[in-house]
Image 1 (cartoon, helix red, strand yellow):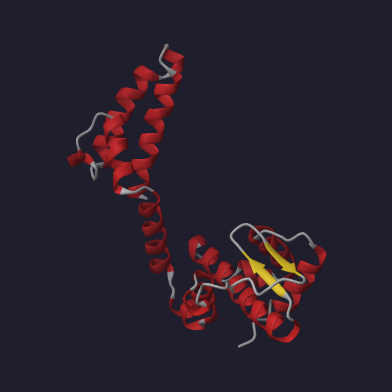
Image 2 (cartoon, one colour):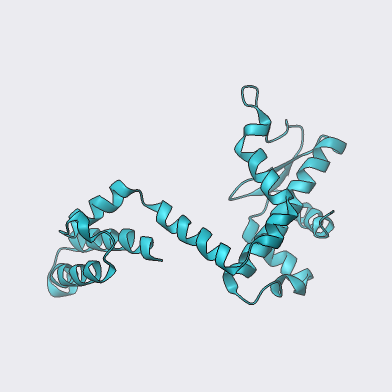
Length: 197
């Protein structure tokens, strides 16, 4: 199925010759299509569906522009832009395109079943795995050391909070503490709390 956002995305890309972020692209599309704000009641599922529709349109557009016009559409996490006189963005002389990360993303976002079958619980699970994946096990162990906690406490949210508050109170700059120590404690606390999101 041809994505109905493609003509508007082309118009927006034409207006932004230096490229545009996905966030700004979504804002521009929402100004043209109120339905983009009505795809789901849950905010996380809404964001997933908006993102999916945009990426689906972009990958369809990338393929058709290259096949029909030899025009490259670069899609990255920070910028989406049309590039003239360049090889296809997912091609490389020593990489099998079908195995590249770009090809896998294109395959995922081209599959409408992914859009249809993903529900609120799936999005929450994706977010949970993302948050847990941010900090490696070693980073979380280091964070526990900063908070002077044994690794047995890695999954004890309440113990981590209590220990952080105790140490932060003494290290807080407003109470004559060391600002660098306070920031280190807060970094450790944030690292550990992400695994509970």
